[in-house]
Length: 317
Image 1 (cartoon, rainbow, N blue to C red):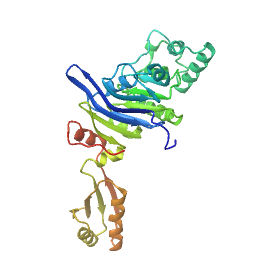
Image 2: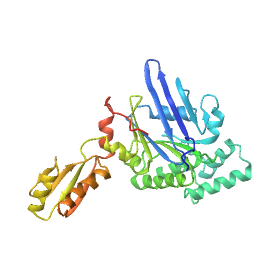
Image 3: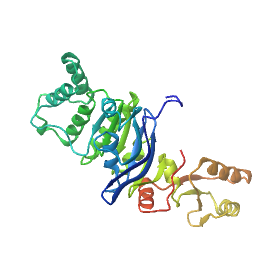
Image 4: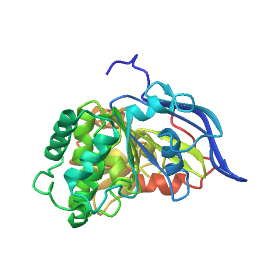
């Protein structure tokens, strides 16, 4: 990926309302090619509406939207040819077999018969559905149906895939299997636009995360950048004896002392620069640290602090 590659998805001032209800209020996004971008937000924040606009299912009321280099409003057919979509609810036809569902999608994409069959077989193998290919999809487990649903979205070989809460309802094992599938797609150069209610999912997968609340972006950045927005992070230092603890406590302003545990807790924003400076100061005073751990807020803390908080600001790109 070069730094000059155009964004796979870009929105500027994206707006959408239903009557007096503003759903999206000036959304600016830029999604780099070949990455995973996660859009988080509480129910009703506008996540699904964003996906529907980007995938040409509904129109925007204002702003500029480009997907795969094409204007969504003026070139919807070109956008549709470049994308795949897996929604919150499975598009699988339970009366058809897994193979028949995929062949149906190949026909809808107007693929030549031989190419369609080759593509279907490759997807069955990729998603570990070969043994179940001849069975009705209604007999599939939740994880199998989600894999088949995603495979159906890939029949047209899209370079951008929208996944709207793709692991909802899956058990932990199936969810992690889906995570690996998503990583494999990105390794092949596919761009993933993901919405999810599972913050752990975004933390594990996303190269970049945006938090949407009441139709506005309240934060945007990497998982590490978002975590640094929230106070409460600290470095815990444990020492071998009370003498070392006392010396360190005098050196480190703002530290909280725990004499029973021979430990200091130093507030931090999680940055490597701060940690390095702290250790250099102790080393200069010949104070040995016996154990060290860094505690930072997780995405749950970020989500709870930012949603509904009008003072939250966006991390600079």
